[in-house]
Image 1 (cartoon, rainbow, N blue to C red):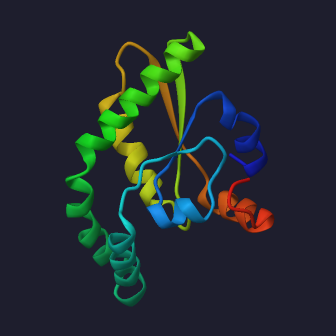
Image 2 (cartoon, rainbow, N blue to C red):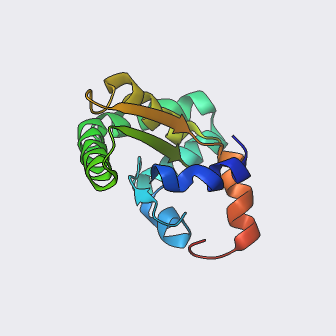
Length: 146
């Protein structure tokens, strides 16, 4: 999915930003919902581990942090899907999950939502957005919200 494709269709579904609270506060897609995989300190720890050690070590540091958040994250998304479907009078919802650099955070959350088939009575399509395309767009606009 190109950034142009993403921008053209983002309003048709739920955009979930899984970056840290500080990243979200700095800049985010209009109407995106914040569902941070890591808090600010956890993101710094995982990121530092990634840079100083390895991708694999960073994943091992992040896994227990993610594990404790899975159920509350799922419950938040179920609530957002239900509200979206009631508001738009539809049983289908597209969920766009995005993060920033390499896409590992959004891939993890998209995997979790897909695994549980959020809201069994609806047709929920989960799309893991292209992180690099979003990074390019945010750098281009240099605004808090674009």
